[in-house]
Image 1 (cartoon, rainbow, N blue to C red):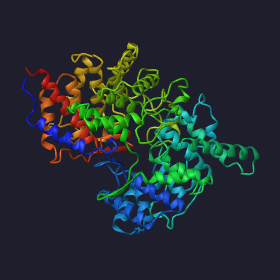
Image 2 (spheres, helix red, strand yellow):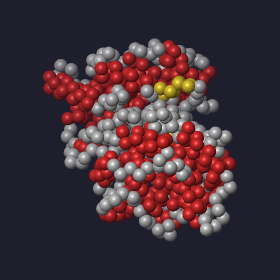
Image 3 (cartoon, rainbow, N blue to C red):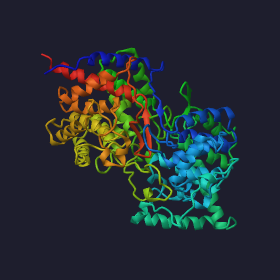
Image 4 (cartoon, rainbow, N blue to C red):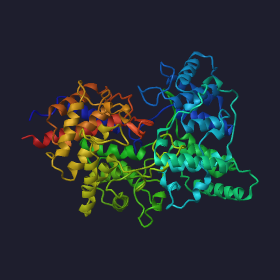
Length: 629
């Protein structure tokens, strides 16, 4: 044994101390959740739509949006990524709304880029819906989902519970918006973004499947239904009832902070939907929603920008695990405060998950400050891990474990929010051309659950056997695992290998050996690891990208769990962390290593660059201490 890498202990202490300094007095941690300028653009669109757009807000948002424009004139959805057409269209229109003239150099450059990439007509459906609401697009040229969808029972295909929870909340609100077809015109047109059509639309590859062809036909039928005259009695009665049901569905799911699901899209569309249903700004539901909207705004020395979500429960659980791994005592006041806060965030209400698990007792934790309708399996597993590391043995952990066990999918894995939510039909709808709309099991969530269950008492061995078998089936030919909620194969592999080790899979097992070999092959020349988001659409990018602190830590966690803490690869990875640590104890990480929707929506969790290196360095040092004579 060669001993730990020089400087590793000092780096771990600096990082640990910096993490402790970031704790809120109430006990929680929350890093910024950075996304892209569509959040800022749509915030301006919403305020214009409601007639509450303040010139100062518009100017501050415009300054941020301008600062994110690429040298090619476009806006990307992640740091260093290619220009994205929909993001660029929305940024362009938002800047026009803020008063930038179309002949200004930055907008002329953007307009040229947009035209070269197909114009507004080639943007995603939700971007064109915004353009329709702003009077810049024809509602009739959009796919349609009617509010009558809410009449379908859960047993019927295309019912709202076939959608993942994030899509469900958005689509119910959007169905009201599309039924009203509102227009709040902006004081300009966007003809400069138009591209003459050649007579044939760009084919959607989803239409080449049996499900796709059915959904295209269904969309045509729905458009014909929508064109029935408003005086047609049966349609008028059914539509009124459907709008009322959708409205009640939305109102019942508003959280204590005024939001819906703790994420920006359902909040924005629910506000618009209820506004169209006649809710005045001073109505308690609307007043709470508008106040909640301000909670997504960050305004500091970097500028005014919008978070898509906030992650205090997730961040706090990760911080507790990291600090315990770094040697902080479970009796430390900071960790006791964190544990007390986490226990108070337990979800005890029945959410949409109960539609398919009606007899399951509520339990678990959500991602955000307030999201009792949608606890998730990933957060629940991580919180239980954190609380158990603190010596907690209370009913909250037991309820969370029972709830998690009850949410296991038929194949043995776990999704994030729902059980067996894997409809292929809803993903083929013309309306759903952006992001994931279902919530099938994933390797990373399943691994986190498995790691949690490893130390839980009285767990049925068959549950663990099924999960291990499912993970084994998901291993890629190159030895890695796909990362649904983090980028990408480094995240999946960094989660699965520790989980397999935790439940007793031997480090010499071929599955672990293949994973180790893959990690060694994709280690960068500088000693770190990185993976670009393009790996979601191009396999040649798997394990390739700029070295980042979070992804290097994920690789190290897998190597350490596999018994490779003294390997050359592990030493080089730790040396990279030591060499790149900043003077205040953290790491610079502009690259996005979190995932909302693979490729379509990416996240830079600002705390990832700290919590995961703290965890990796702590386990690395502990592994060396365990073998020191």
